[in-house]
Image: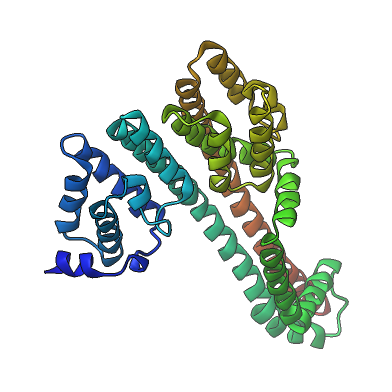
Length: 359
């Protein structure tokens, strides 16, 4: 009954899918289409239990196939971006749909794995930094003012470090809400500006020019660019069309605009290798393998090789960077807390010395 109810829903009911759910759908479809027709494969998926969103997408796809549409046309546009549907269409036209679906599933899964790996690697340092800032602010907001009254009541001249910490504590208590509001407004402003394509391109181009972060971001985008373009080329799509289709999948606005310009030049007769100079800070490995692949007529395999190698290098570099960041944050936190404690202990020691001298 659930499957029949799903099939009776209108096509507009197909919701957007998360990347992981989309990759899972493509993987299941690739496995089933290798042993049965597409319509039977989708009907089999519809009968399987699953989450409502996934079942709705399967049902919408099944209705499209039942009406006579090809799989690429039956896939709901709200659930599957244009690059995925174009890859499926190319696989249908070439008669290699199961192979292309498998390759597409591998591409989507690799992209999800890379994103998850980066998030997992950055979670601990980010949490550590947040705790460090919270501890320092709490000490300046609550601990230091409570002790400041006793220190100033003694009438003794306070050390310079103590006066500096007390001044910082007063400033945070008086203007902390203003700083927090300015930070919040700044973040909202950046989010609003990022909605503009021109502003996004300028921001991303600026990030790519940063000494260490820029190269890392360029490698991340290069992995996505090579992996998606390799999938499109393997599907038999014309190179200019493939370049245009991967533009929406790119996260960096500067790379997206460069890829759009590359597509225009390739359509005008230029080779892909000649247009690689447009990609900002393109890794040397990507340039070399792309040039070799195009010259040898093996562009798709060498693009895959470039993506795999760069992915591995990103993992190694990320682990090395985090191995340096974590102790640095701990040292900074310990230094800040130690400085606050020292600023409190110094005047107390001075008072004890004065009291001892008077006795």
